[in-house]
Length: 167
Ligand SMILES: [Fe+2]
Image (cartoon, rainbow, N blue to C red; front, side):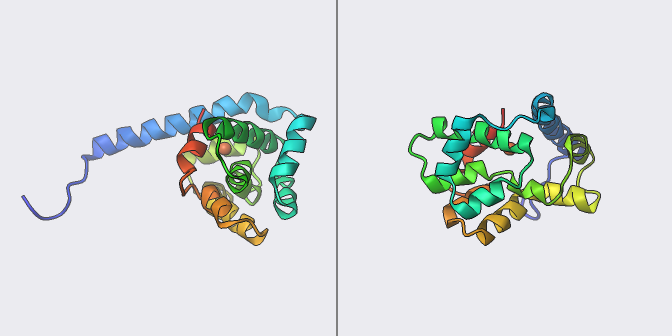
């Protein structure tokens, strides 16, 4: 039969939405335990970051919370393991993939709330839009197109970044 494309029944859409929310909350919960620590990334990690980022990108990276900086290093290290031929621009994208969260300025508990209730307030919306915001910040800092694209979740390295981030 022709006509409009068929949408899945409402019940199945709900199950998919609940499954995806559970996945995201689970991801956040795994990060939750380490999020209270005020420890900076290790000195050799910081030295590696400084080599990978341009001065403008490094200034941007330093605006992230310490928990996000540690997360960025962990994700970027896993990203390089998955993608040994990653370019410097791609590694910069991995290190800055969550930089857009600086504009929402949410703490750990508020991030959990934002994930559960969705983009209902201005700051929750900023948190949910962090990929686009991060891409804009990186472009303004002079990042290469490949870096901006990866922060937006697009391009040839996007699947490797998602896998490195999604533990
Ligand atoms: Fe992340």
